[in-house]
Length: 177
Image (cartoon, rainbow, N blue to C red):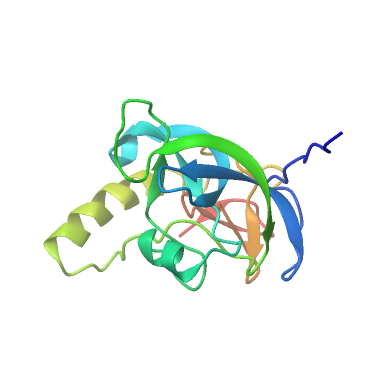
C-alpha cells in the first residue's frame, strides 16, 4: 500500500537542505511548481481570476525559475491560474503533493518600488501601495496576515506574508511600511 504524503503548510518551520512533502501545481508543460496559501483572487490588485502563488522556498530547475521569473530570494510576480477557462501557459492542470528540497527560507511577490520611474511600474506601484497602505497599523494575531489569513514568515527580524509581502513588526505585531 502506497503511503499518503501530508503536505506542509506555512506554519511548518523549514530547514534549508531538507526535503518536505509540498503541494505542487502540475502545469501544462509537466512542471511541478510548489504553491502556498489558498486559492484566491485579488480584485483590489487588478487580479480577478483565482490563482495560487509560487512557493519559491523549494528547488526548481533553472529553466523553470527563468520561465516563472523566480529570483534568488524565491520571489516572483508570476501567479498560477486556477480558473478552468484560462488557457495560458501558467494554468494549473491538477494539484499534487511531491517531495521538494528546501533551498531558501524566503519567498513571496516582488512588489514594485514606491519610487518607480517607468510609467508602467509607477501605475502598478500606485495600485499595490494604495492596497498595502490600507493595512498599515492593522494588528497581526499569532503571526497570521490580516489579508488572507496566511501564516507570516520571519525574515531579518520582521514578519512577512509570503503571498503579498505585507510586513509586520515582530514585537508590536502591527503591519508596517
